Amino acid sequence: MAAWVDRVLGRSSPLVIQASAAPPVGPPVGNRSRGGSSRYGGSQLLAVDEAVDATPNSIQRIFELAQTGDTTRLIDLYKHARVKDDRLDAVCATRVLAVTGRPYVLRTPPGLERDPVAMETARRVERVFNEVSDFKGILGHLAHGVLEHLAVLQHNWRLNARGEWVSQPVWQHPNRFSWRLPDVSPMWARYETGLDSDGSPVAGRLLSDWPGRFVVFAPISGRSDYPWMRGAMRSRVMPSAVKRMAFRWWTKMVERWGQPQVYAERSDELSAAEASVDDQLLAAMRALSSQWYATIPKGAEFKTIQSQINADLHRLYIEHQDKADAISILGQNLTTEIAKGGSYAAAKAHQNVRLDLLASDLSELGEVITDQWIAPMCAWNGWRHVPYLDFVLGWQSEITVQEYMAGLYTADEVRGSKGHGPEPHGAGSRYYSGGAPATKTVTGTLVGQPEADPVEVEVVDEG
Image (cartoon, rainbow, N blue to C red; front, side, top):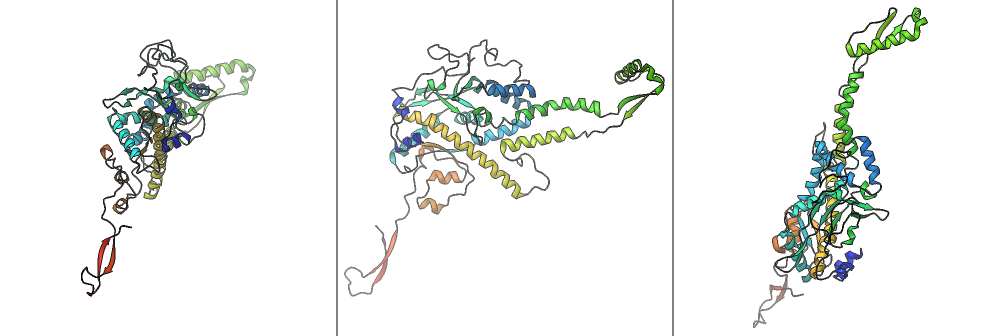
């Protein structure tokens, strides 16, 4: 709350006090470029291990490892689960694309909508963002924090042609980071092989050692818990592995239980030689199973237990998990399938749930970009009244022309209510003030004709 008050009032914050003539220097920008003896193998490549070829047992071990703050394997598990499950990948991609496809607006702090300094700062930040290469792609990388609990960008601060400090952030693979306990602070993984600008190892060091150097997105996403428990994929990786591997288990079960089961009965005359006869019967049944023929001792008889199995059970299980993927990640499933008896009301209710998730994702993402990107940039450039990034959902009621002309909304807000982006260079950030002046009707006589009949005229109401 304090940081927000500082931005609204335009006063110095701890970040501004720490700021010097230039942003702090941190680890070199870019992903791991040198190999090492870490558990990842050479560079960023992964060997086939428990995260790549995950089983329920290895997934549980990865969950237990994450409880210690080491989430590197957890991130790898999420990445590879999507590669091997097209349904899970589709719903995850849909949630990310819903974020990257939204237009955004730089808004002045509340109460400063008409402040010229605040409006100029918003215009400058918007111009800088328009010059960032692949800005939408950067938003897409950050949006994965909703799915995987963590997304990290590393700032690359530089002076532009106008002498302004601006950043071209670089995505960092989140498997390079962990959480320090018990304060749950983000840090470089203990087996990270990268070096900082002084050549010192960064392994195990907190990201707060380089203030203003990183954007760390670890959203709540509707789950109040430790960060590694929050990602939307957390509840879906185990069912995904079971769904993928169950085909093998199901085939074995069908082979075993989908056919008559053989058992043997022996007569009382064979009881004297019970042990040897039982051994012969077991050997005969094994031969019958593997070779389809067997020699049966005299006085014994083979019989069968007729059994039936529903061959559709595996398909039904897959359908159930596919639907659960959509409901868990998107909040509904009618965007991917239409159930029998579906209605417009049901579809609208499902869509409203999905839009609630989208609104939450956009809200948290906007706050993180404001606090960890816009605020440092304004501090180092001396820009007052930090604007905030606001995403346009485009599904609220459209703003009418009358409301705009009454000065209640800016042109950008009108465009946003119709699903359009803002006007370039901040042209739509001002409120309408060019309407016809207010008038009032007055009654009187014409000048120089005091004895003439009174007339009514419209005059400007100057208040």
